[in-house]
Image 1 (tube, rainbow, N blue to C red):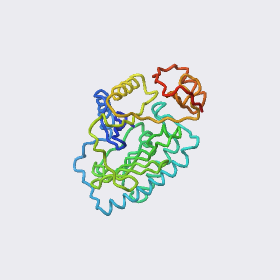
Image 2 (tube, rainbow, N blue to C red):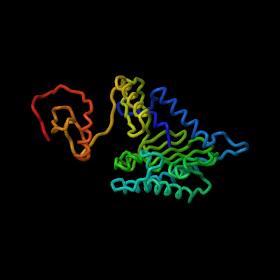
Image 3 (cartoon, rainbow, N blue to C red):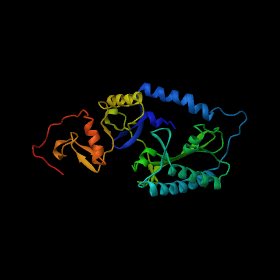
Image 4 (tube, rainbow, N blue to C red):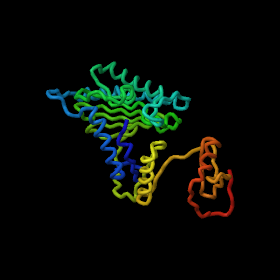
Length: 302
């Protein structure tokens, strides 16, 4: 399911997040996709005569407690299987994946909500995928928008950066939002008019107002088609001279020089991979490398 995250990056100012749009072309593509698909599907125009739903503050508190407990249960299921081998299915492409855990987590959440609130409605990523992307009518009724494993690609590769992402809309306005990263036990919550919290402590956006002082956390989509891949690299090239830092994640069971030689701590060159076979395939690509001056002539090996 396309989201704004596809064309936005997180802009961090010394560790505190905000969001900024990327290129005009990418933004226009995203907006066009939204107009042509999801906006048409969820039928944003209010049905004539549809009554608004009224929920009291105690009722909203009870709903929040219910979903908080269910999200924790969902997180336990993800933790149970994140390090295990997984049966993976492709949905619309080889990078659009779903596992049995995605389906099980979504079912856990929906069943748990319906047990207490049988009149609530749902827009779930896996349920939507099963209907060939057709989203049910979006009404004034309390409607849960669920991505059971936000970051299925990471989950498939046992990368801990996955979350349970849930929102509740009432009268077509979001009232509750929860993002839970079970592998690291990080819980982000927000309620309309009550601010946002991280692990039950208030959190707020950065006061950073200069791109040159920001840190960008940037995700590149592999195997996404030549045009999209080219656009991503162009965006990265535009960002690099404008920001304070760009971060990605690296780790590996084998570490060596990108040329294929033995890794030298003093060389300031590193290739990390899970296996020697993966590392060799990257070495064989003969990628362009930036040469850095050595600070020490001595060699320091692993």
